[in-house]
Amino acid sequence: MKLKYVGLIAAVFSSIWTVNANYHSDTYITNEERWKNVMEINRETKSDDSFEEVVTSTYNSLELNSYEAPSLKVFTSALRGYYKMVEEGNIQNAKLTIVDFSLSSSKQRLWVIDMNNNEVVLQSYVAHGRKTGDEFATTFSNRVNSHMSSLGFYITGETYMGRNGFSMRLDGVEKGINDNARRRAIVVHGADYASEELVERQGKLGRSYGCPAVPMEVNRTLIELIKDHSCLFIYFPSNDYISRSSIV
Image 1 (tube, rainbow, N blue to C red):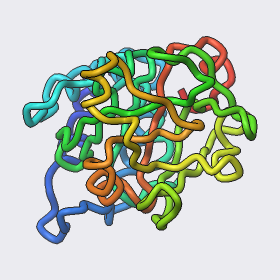
Image 2: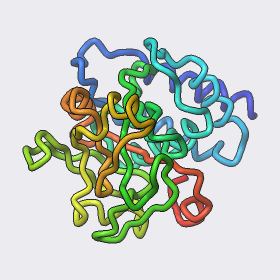
Image 3: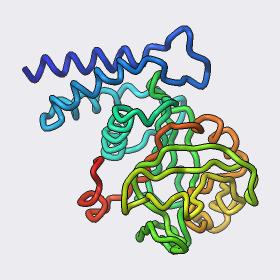
Image 4: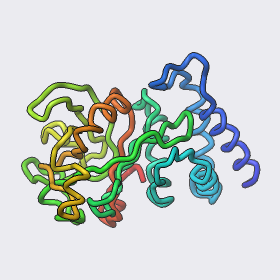
């Protein structure tokens, strides 16, 4: 039975990563039925090792395009949440953005994965909130005016021009964990303090008021890739988050 489901999942995942000839370069999901098939299989196997086996196989076959890969542990959590959000009808843009706040801010700890092609299409520096930590993130909050980052899963929203230039709104989907993102004006935007030059000079990035801020030269490319209902996941190995999240 286990091998049967492994084969089924692998077949469905393989079909997902086959590029439809009608897709444009931004690769929006158009066939909802195939995602439902993935989730039906996932529900039957989520307490089994088969899902992890397929995730591992998927991870090992990621096309990296000269980028580094996120850790398997983080990728597994991100994939679980991604497909849950797909099942709930929240995802229209088949990109998965992973932010690993267990890493130093001196590392490029943001990845964008094109889920239809199973490839990493961007890797970047990303800043955390100033009250979340210094070089390393340690503390997180959903509270307004906390100036901390919030963990968990988000849906990317609309773009706008604000005081930080071209920016993109985020909607947190985890109640009590990140659902104040709109009220807190937690958005993706570019920032001079998120630059590689700053890392080379002081060994770490500057910090935001809680936003996942990225280098100015990456900002527009990133936002254009992931805007309009893709999945963004901010990871940290927090027992509190794991105990409260209904997704991971």
